[in-house]
Length: 177
Image (cartoon, rainbow, N blue to C red; front, side, top):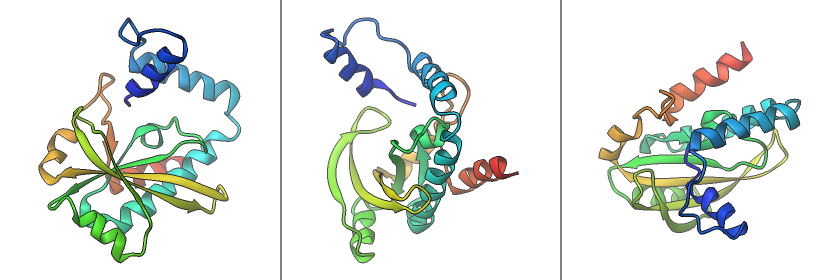
């Protein structure tokens, strides 16, 4: 998981330059897990499952674009306050946008920093999550089809940073078993 933007915002709020020694992503993720264990242990597992089920709905809806789930929902640190981040690997960068238009989905388009540090287009929608009874942000990061090869490289802990619908289904089944 990448915490770069959050670390820079926190450093700025603390009056630091953000260029000094900031904690590693692994240290921050461990602290998030500790926080969840202490303050959210009774609600977070159900919230995470609800977010994962909603992500799966969107992954199935956009299956033609080879969606992969990343971020806190994939890594298991999401709460009801978390958004869903899907990476779409498209043959044509406008095809996902056209699919949303065809499906009557309202979205906001913007440019964000992608997984390799380069700008990518992001299409953001609000999706109602019945299990949580609220809207959740779903962000669709648009990548070229060839980018999928580098998308599954393991992180420092040996985990894949994202997974496809089959991998997400396995996560959902592990918890319900």
